[in-house]
Length: 314
Ligand code: TXA
Ligand code: MG
Image: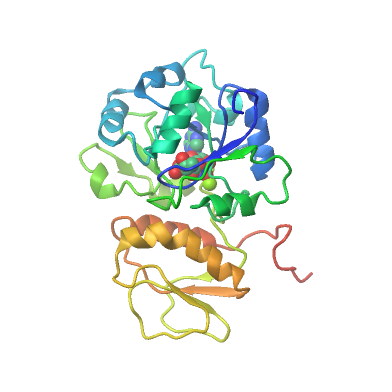
């Protein structure tokens, strides 16, 4: 399917990806079209093996030590594109850098090994929406898009549940572009600078995917809720004294990894209840909680009207 230019959705340990032959302009173009993704937002190229890295990129010493420590796993490295890099220019959205990662999920590895070259794969959701952590989520996202995906590999629920950490390794010191399941503490010792939100604002779109409004369900998300308003659905972290007719718990025991694993599936469930607002109780800003809060902040950011969202008063 991939060799024929078709899109194949597959599980990774973070979220499901919508895969295309990274070396085919037409296949990569159809990923952007299927997602409704802005052409300025580049894609991650997934690899089976570190031996393929230099086919696409020029890693520096820092990148190689990060790769050795964290691959296969939920870390994406943005690297200079190799001269004559065979990947479609569109995976880089016209930039001279390319994002690569080796995923850990056995089904992803098997697919990548069988294909033999890079698979460009954004998260398998319509642009701006909640990432899929189960095959059924992918099917629901593209229910109205004929032939997308041409094949959907079901690898069960994604173990990690939120997207990879993205590091820009094009300069001397790696810079974090997107918080993820590889935490700042784990990256300590690799000389990483946390770009955080301030650097993202100062520099011209270092990681264009980190648009303010993103990862959003249909309902409005309200963070750090310590009380509830009429009609709100409740998403708790740990046990609270709040009560709501429609409620889910990210982790009754207050475990951040469990919360990451469940976040997107529970947002989908609460969204399906039809509630206008999902109120989320405070999540500690530590470890993977930093990435959880980052995604919730983007989900709660004001967003432009989209087809299928609530009607906007004019
Ligand atoms: O966990 C993940 O990373 C998942 C799975 C499927 O691997 N993929 C994923 O892809 O989250 P996507 O397309 O939803 O997010 C990729 C992020 C975006 O924020 C994008 O802007 C950034 O990586 N990115 C990709 N290439 C880049 C580049 N050359 N320079 C800067 N940022 C880049
Ligand atoms: Mg995405």
